[in-house]
Image 1: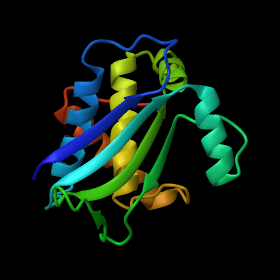
Image 2 (image 1 turned 90 degrees about the vertical axis):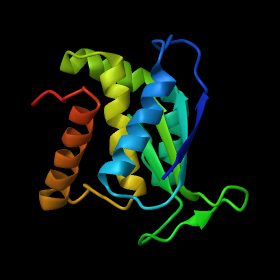
Image 3 (image 1 turned 135 degrees about the vertical axis):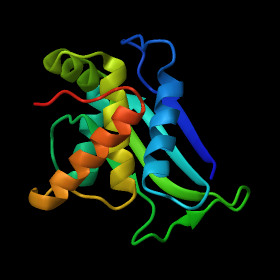
Image 4 (image 1 turned 45 degrees about the vertical axis):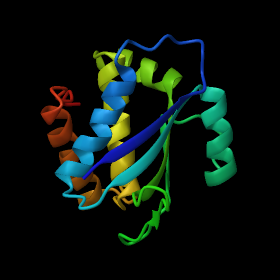
Length: 160
């Protein structure tokens, strides 16, 4: 399995730590490995500011506020479009608010690296079909998977 992660930084006001792009790639790969994703995959990740994610949240979810991360899956029920040049399954788009990642990192008392890794893992699970909107068991399963992947990356999440 190979994983191609296309990362676009669309915000300039928060300087990201060195290694952030590598961390995002590792988080995507670790999540897919943990989920035993059998094929080559492609994920697009955009790092934006609160204004940009608020606009997307309003446009696609009818929620007029900023959020930490949005996921735009390209597949459904394990069926994905395939990049004709590479044969990789195109899983979808991840959009992370760097503003929100920084404020949540401060709130939870850890670094922005851990927060960006968490948001990446969380969003890739969404691309694979996981959901937590209804809470309950689905939310618990997602949280457990996030914790296992982050521990594998050496970034165990804080118990909140």
